[in-house]
Image (tube, rainbow, N blue to C red; front, top):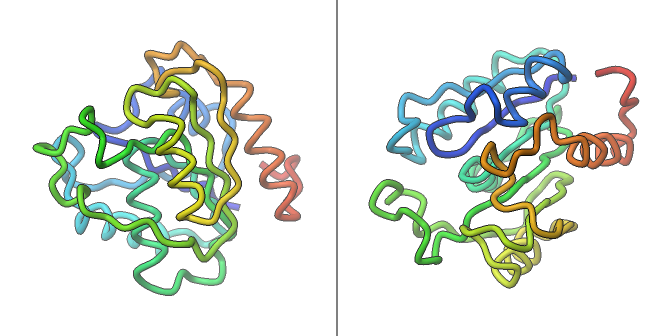
Length: 187
């Protein structure tokens, strides 16, 4: 099993749960490497996802955060995903229509249309995420046809949320993968 890490704007710093999982827990893991971390371009991010998927030799589960959720949703719905894509763990997607969304930095992400995702997914959000209201999160979950778990008062589920290794998230990912028939002792 390969876990493909897809962070949001500017990538995930070393204290972010994604980075901690990548280095301390999820092995093997691969992080996408777009050239546009600070001014994300959807075409560049999609190409980075494709390169990372093509270089992986095992089945894949995507572990995404923030803008990475939208990048993988776009990628999954714009070409048939390879059979070895087992699922996507989606955490804290921003609402592209919200006033807090930095549209000037992310113009290629502002007009995305959420569609049902063709692989098993799980959406994790926070009830006080400054980038996505509970109503917007519910709408995304319905549009993506994914189960949704709203966590109480966790902010944007990022470094500023002080999650450390985010044990709750680890339990949720373990349960998600077990539901796919993947033995969590294998990663």
